[in-house]
Image 1 (tube, rainbow, N blue to C red):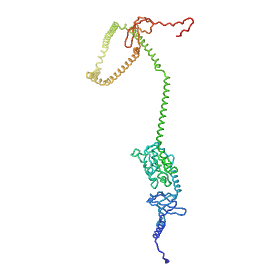
Image 2: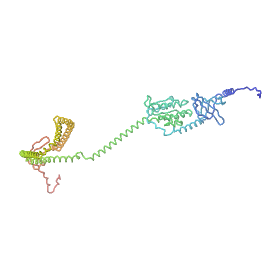
Image 3: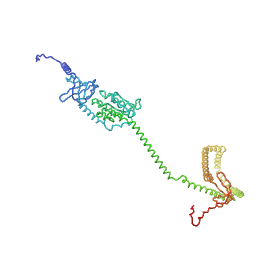
Length: 538
């Protein structure tokens, strides 16, 4: 069937697609499209990002090329209403039109707050904001790390406040506090401070302050990024967040160990007031000194009270000293009595020990021994004669039978005689000396040790005898008084003027003579009789 005649031009599919592409791009160019992000699954393996912008009645595909993704100040998220700016074009292969996005911004403050709340719930569910994760700030940090802009008023306020309260070593890590690179720079600063070695050339901070001045929610959005919140939560160094004014709240305020309403308040929370600390220490020292004095005074009083209740040292040893003196006095009598008893025993035994008695006893014993010897020789001779008379016949009868036995015994005797020769005896003696030499070597030290022990015992007994001797009493200042007959004089009774005495001291003995009359007791005066004034009672 032939086609009807027409003057319409004939186009290929590619030509139509290219014509539509040029028409769309020329007609619209750059546009701003408001819609809700749908179907966003993150970046593709190629680095590009694909999703859909939709509203209640329509939808349009959107693409962010890899080169533009890093430049986006605000990254797309599923379900977020945004305003996308870009070029409208088509994709000829599937006959679809799409927008190539250059920038994205939230569709108003309400959208940002909704995104902020959704992100806060997500991070809170992970436990990043839990109170148990909060750490106590160091009381007096040696080094403080400050993460902020180096040119703003914030760093000057912090340094000025630290210098007023307690001058400290401050390390500043300069970062941008708003814009596209704010979040990665803050993350690098937090992780950089945590990466310092404790003993490295640059000291590792004991405390971090993340600070920024006030601003809109868009200006502070870099501190709401998830990467910044996770870096603060993972920090091994305690962090104080001081972003914005008192009414501004960011997500790192929830993750940090302490939230300060202003940067100045962060500096005040970081260090104590040096003057107050010095005053507090001085007050504690003063109180400690007062307490020490009170305790010392209390112990001194207690010691005095205890000392007052203790007996005197002389009283403690007076009884023992008296017992010692009494024992020393009795010792002399005991020694004299013992000496007298031994003398009496010796006198009793001395008559039996005269030379004549000993000589007579020796003679008697010698005669008895000679008689016993003579009787023994005579008895042995008679016994031998009787034995010979008895055994000679028997021997004559037994000689033929016992000759072999006698020969064997003779041989045995010869063998024994060989062993009893002088040479054999010398060998036995030498062997015995060799065996006895170790015994003798052990006996010599033992003998020396025994003699040493006996010597020490003898010395100890000598010292004991010396301590018990009356000589030691004389050495303490006492004297021993004897009469002319050598008897002890214990009292003055019985002594008359002119008696000779011997006084023995520790270093010798001297003679003395009693002179004068014995003292007579004084008579008390008798009171006067009659009336008158009363006499003295003394």
